[in-house]
Length: 358
Ligand SMILES: [Zn+2]
Image (cartoon, rainbow, N blue to C red; front, side, top):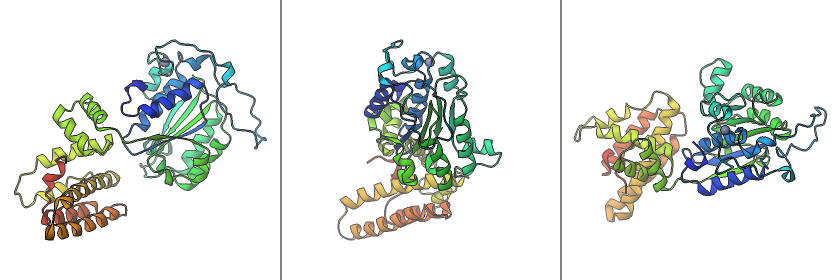
């Protein structure tokens, strides 16, 4: 794995490489983009490269000036090393790729690097010894702040990747803010987020925002094929995915479930809806993706329709949009899905149509 293997984000990866090569890595970064566009993967590669023992940065760990805990107005540590101290040390073909073979790279690849921590709701559940919650809490960010004060164990950089940072509650964001305002030398916090508006302005203004666009269909197809999909299936899923690998995976699950339905079976919509995941967050995401597919399909039919058919499809579009909004509330997702599918079928759009690309 390296930056080169992250497909469909050429401009973004180029920017990340430039940051690594300049030696001016900001202490707080936000990787922003739709779900399934490679943000987390890129964050892990970025962390891996920074800490790779063979990387160009190896000779230049961040100079640790003795931190003065009373100096609240000290400027944030800007970078591991000033530019003039940077020497071109080329040990790989591309200095901004991790070597993949040193102890640091191997530990990072296995998720066991002592100085690279992924903070998400699953990690929080283990940390706080409780069931997985939808939110990231203040206690977790306090722990992060505490770790950030400790020296790295193995590498030059101590890196925290807060995954899906929209899960951060406002108090938790405030707790994290302290680390972003006065980052201990050699500390990097990367937040991956699909909705920037879920972050406080104070967090946004202190972070370097890196944008991840939707993945082009060709890149999606290549990734899906590399993951074992046949060429036709990969093309079909790439067409349904709206530029998101996560949506492609969800569409793949639909394809399987829809192809298992018997045409003409009166109960097939109920059978389909009852196959939603038990986990309510996953069920909600799946219903939202399905409603998005339904909306795309209905819009397509609406554009081609005339007369009474157009009127009927206009009503269906409005209704499906209403249901799509309801999916963000605490409702029965199964009921919501059944309603949407039954109403669509009455208007002439069948569940089987949803998995056919335009
Ligand atoms: Zn390495």
